Amino acid sequence: MESSINPLDTSDLRLLDLLQRDATLSNQALAEAAHLSPATCHRRVKRLREEGWIERQVAIVSADKLRRTRAPGLQALVEVSLDIQTEDAMTLFEARAVADAAVQQCWRVSPGPDFMLVLAVADMEDYQRVAARLFTATLGVRNVRTFFAVKRAKFDTALPL
Image (cartoon, rainbow, N blue to C red; front, side, top):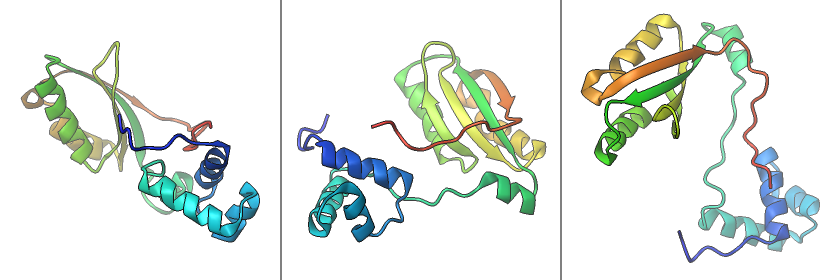
């Protein structure tokens, strides 16, 4: 745990909430919405970035629109169990998974499988290529269960604050 990180106050939480819903707000608009002066707002947001409260700012691309203009694509949720659960085995698999472009999310979980992955692949052939790269005995994989998404009912990136 990093001891140099300051605790968050209500203004910090308000800024984080506003930014995680719309990171394109200008400093002026953000300051108004957070009931702060623009200088104070800028200083606080800078500190939140420097202390790691804001990891990065990204554009979330519409998967639905992308599917309409390109190949449909598949989302897969994959349970992965390893043969052994030593730290070395877990670290090796995790490193390979996070380095693979098809892996959008990689979670170590317990109990049950050792990992849950969220994959974005173009089609079943692409999934088979990912499976050949990641779900092999050389990486100590014992069992894989894959679930293909048929509908996304909710997708949100905002954390409750």
